[in-house]
Length: 107
Image (cartoon, rainbow, N blue to C red; front, side, top):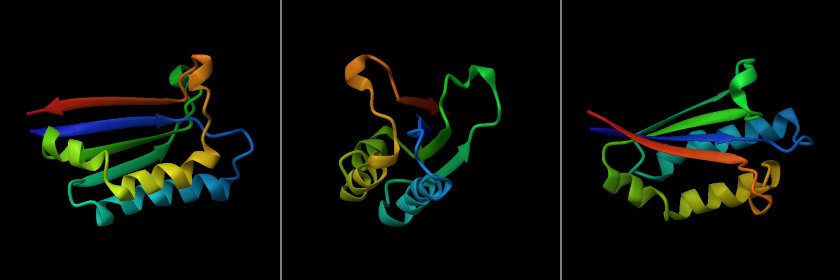
């Protein structure tokens, strides 16, 4: 079984291309820092009117829900979230989701 943790992000309008790339690099470094994470795939949206304003996506792969549970509180994950947050939208308090997280399991 594989767990896919899919995350969609919205960048702040003032985020530069370099800052966007920095966030992608932070994500790509996570498998080398967190053994519970098997792999990660990142990419920016392809022009699509159904993207609802999301700019980038990441797919995190885990061998089990237990490994996903190890990942979430890991210090490297916490650090990545803190380092990337200045470049990402945050309107959760206003009821507008700026990040979507969806976990699914495959056989």
